[in-house]
Length: 153
Image 1 (tube, rainbow, N blue to C red):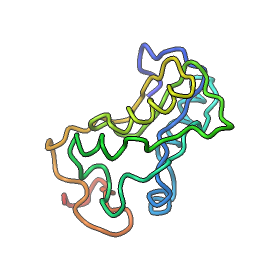
Image 2 (spheres, one colour):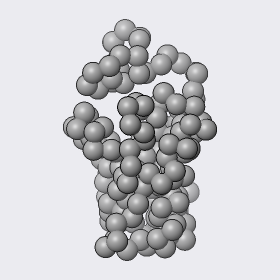
Image 3 (tube, helix red, strand yellow):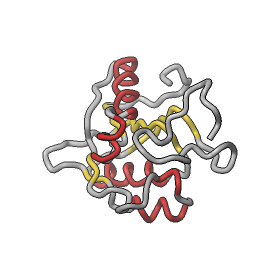
Image 4 (cartoon, rainbow, N blue to C red):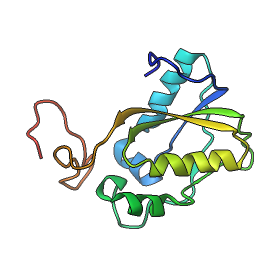
């Protein structure tokens, strides 16, 4: 991710945090892992600037199952910057997958409302809805995990 030409000069690297429930199911926050490595490679500090104020809707499941308008509505006000956190002017926001941009937009709005002049987004992947098999086709722990060699679901 850091070998991409033209990464902006930022003061800090942060990530889009998972909900507590998703973190408990996964056991780790993949966006935090990515952000920490990106920060190290850019020689910038990683910082937890955001926290989830709300989930994405009780009992509605992951964002991956929602349409664009529904995602944006669900994410409105989903992130806050804790009072004790000082947000620098130039922030690099890291997330694992960009689908519609609703989650990233909500996170960036929270950062800008607390002082960021610019929020740049770096994602590991870009999803194209409808372009392949659905990832969330079974329930239980790690519902979207697919590994090479697994049958398509």
